[in-house]
Amino acid sequence: MMKWMKLAFRNILRNSRRSFVTIVAISVGFAAISLYYGYIHNVYNGLRYMAIHGEGLGNLRINKAGWQEKGKLEPEKYMFSLEETNKIMKLVGDEKGVKLATPQMQVTGIVTNGNVSTVFIAQAVVPRDDKIIQARWADFLPIKGQKLRDDIVYGAEMAKDLARYLDMAPGKDGVVMAPTISGQMNALDIQVNGVYDSGNDFSNDKFMRLNFYFAQSLLDTQSAERIVVLLDDWRDTQRMRSMLLKKIKAAGIDCEIRTWDELSLSFSKQKAFLDTMFMFLFSIVLVIVVMTTVNTMGMAILERTREIGTLRALGLKRRGVSLLFALEGAFLGFLGSLLGIVLHTCVWAIIRVYPPKYTPPGFSMSVSLFVDMVPVMLFLLLLSTVLLSLFSAIVPARRAARQNIVDALGHV
Amino acid sequence: MALIEMKNITKDYYLGETVVQALRGIDLQIDKKEFVAVWGPSGSGKTTLLNLIGAVDDPTSGELTIAGKNVRSLTDDQKSEHRNATIGFIFQGFNLVPVLSALENVMLPLQIKGASASEARKQAMMRLEEVGLTDLANNRPAKMSGGQQQRVSIARALVNNPSLVIADEPTANLDSRTAHMVIDIMRELNEKDEITFIFSTHDQRLLDKVRRLIRLEDGKIVNEDPGL
Image (cartoon, one colour):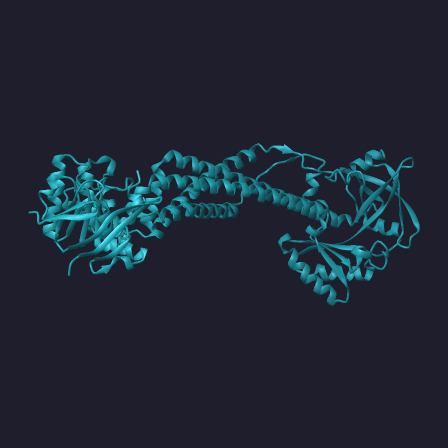
C-alpha cells in the first residue's frame, strides 16, 4: 500500500498548480465549515448557559402532574403543598450530582406606581438560591441597584423597560396586584431593589422578579408551583430526570419533570435554525469538494490515459487503478483539510484577540462573536473530507480503470 | 509445446457502421527462445497482432493460447495476472511513469505482483545493471535520453523474468547508434535468458538481426522468412 501512496502523492505534485487550486478550494470549504461549527458551538454553550442560569430554568423543573395542562385553571390542585415541597426538596437534595433544589412560583398581575399601571409576569424565587442559579450570569448582565434579598421580602427586581414605563428606579415603591389562588384580588406594596436587563426585547417590558415568600403572601398560599433543580453537570440532565421521576413517584407524589431545553423556547428554536444553516453550508461545501475533486481527477485521468494503459499492460488490475486515483483524491482531501485547519486556527486566533460585536435577533444587547476550538470536530471533519474526496475520486477512477488498454496506450 | 499458438484468429474493429478487418484468419506458432519480427506496411495489422499476443486485446474469433493458457477464457483479473507473470512490454514511446525514478519504474511490475520493496529493488538493480544503467537508477525519465529510457523500459520488461517480451516498434524513436545498442541488448537477453522476443518494426537494422520474419499485409501473413 505504501508504494501506491507514494506514487499517488507524487502524482499530486505532478500538476502542482492544479493540485494547489484544488487544495485551496477544499481548505476554504473546510475552514468555512469548521469556523461556523466553532461559532455555533460557542452560541449553543452561551444559549444553554443563558437558559439554565440567565432565564433561571435550572436543569430540571418539577411540577405536579397535570400542571402544564390544567395548572392555570385549578392552581391549588396542581401546586405542591408545603409538605410535598419539603419532601421533594429533601428527596432531590440528597441525590448526588444535585447542586440545588429550590421552590419557585410564577405570578402574573398588574403593577402600578400609583399613576400608571401595566401587566407584569414575575418569577418568584428564593433569593439565596437564585444567586446560586444565576452564578456568573449576574456578572454578565449586572443589575442596577440591589439584587433580591432574603431579609427584604417585599423587595423586587424590575426589567428595564417595565421600570422605564412606570418611571421606577431602585428605592422607589409600587404596588402589585394579582388574584389569589382562590380567585380574589390581592394587592401588596413592593419596593424596587434593582433594575435589570433580561437580555431579551420581548421580556424587558413585562418581567419582574419577586421574593418567593412574598409571592406566597400575594397569592395567599403556602404551596409552590414548581421545584427547580440545578445539577453539577448539565450533561446529566436526561439521566437525572429519569432517576428523579422514579424516585419522586415512588415516594407517592405524582409529578412531571421537564428539562431546560424543553422549557427554553429560544434555545430550541435558535438551535434548530443554526443547525439548518450548518447543514445548508455543509451541503454547499460538500458540493464544492466533490465537484473540485471530480474535476481535478477527471483532468488527471485524461492527461494520464497512456500511463493507465501502461500500468494495466504491466499487470495492474482495474481495482489497482481505481485505488491509485482514489488515493490521490484522498490525499487532496487530506492536504486540503490540513490547510483548512491552519486557516481555521488563524481566523480563530484573530477573532479571539479582536472579537467582532453583533446583536443577535431578539437580544437587547450586543454580544461578542467567538469561535470555539473543537479538536474532535476538526478531526471528524478532516476524516469526512478525506473520505468524501476519496469517494469523489472513485467515480472518475472507475472510469479510468474500465478504459480499453489498447485505446489507452494509443491515447495522445 | 509452442509458447504461442494462434488458430484462425480474426480481429474486427467497428467504426460506426463500418467494419475494419484488422486480422483475417491468422495461423501462427511461436516457440520458446525465438527472436521474431513482425513487419509490413502501416495498417497491415502488426500492432493488432502484438496486442492480441500481449493479452491486452481480445480476438473477434479464433483460438489463442499463450504459455498453455487459452487467453479468451480468462477474466480481466486473470489476464492482468497473466500479463504480469508471463509477458514483458517494450513500447515505442517508452511509457515510463514520469514521477518515478528509473529504479522505481523497473520495480513496478514486481510491486504489482506483490513483491516486497527490498526484493523488488534487488531484482530491479540487477536488470538495470544488465542494461548498463546502474548510475542513473535514481534519475527520473525526464533527465534521461531516449536510448536510456528505452533501456529502462527493457529492464522493466524483463524484471519479472517473463517467458515472452513484446516490443512495438522499439527503435522507432531512437537514433541509429542507440537503436543498435538496444537491438544488441535484446539479442543478448534473448540468447542468455532464453526469453522469446516478438516485435513489430519497419527498421531494416532490426530486421537484419532477427531469426524469424513474419510479414503481414492487409491482416494476413503473406510471408515467413527464417531470418538469420
